[in-house]
Image (cartoon, rainbow, N blue to C red):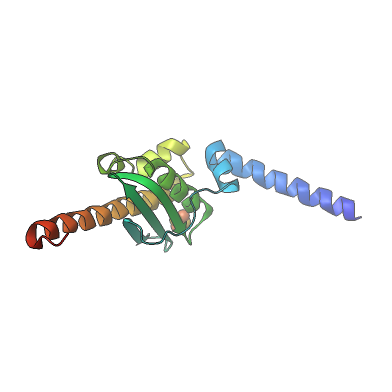
Length: 155
Ligand code: FES
């Protein structure tokens, strides 16, 4: 009896995996199974927290070295798609300069994933928007540092 139940559960799990893979594509499915770049970061150089229209929130953390992203991570309280999109936003950000980061948007995340179901495309836009806000945060801090250096010479 126990075995039959195990078989049933395994079959059900396989079925769910298959449906998920078909709906979201192999890349998103694999990332959902093996999530990467999820977590917070202490004292990031660029940080943003954005709540989308759906009510879900995304956070993105960026660490720069020589004006390139050395490390990136994300957190979200949203759906599986938002986690996948946040994860790819972080992955795509690593190694990029600010000029290159500007190119990473909801559209490029969707392109990378080969699309998402229509009703979940906004998850990619939330990730793209949060990344752009984190970049702005970095640029503002960087600008302020320059500003304070020329104005009071303390830096
Ligand atoms: Fe809100 Fe996916 S449903 S981010």
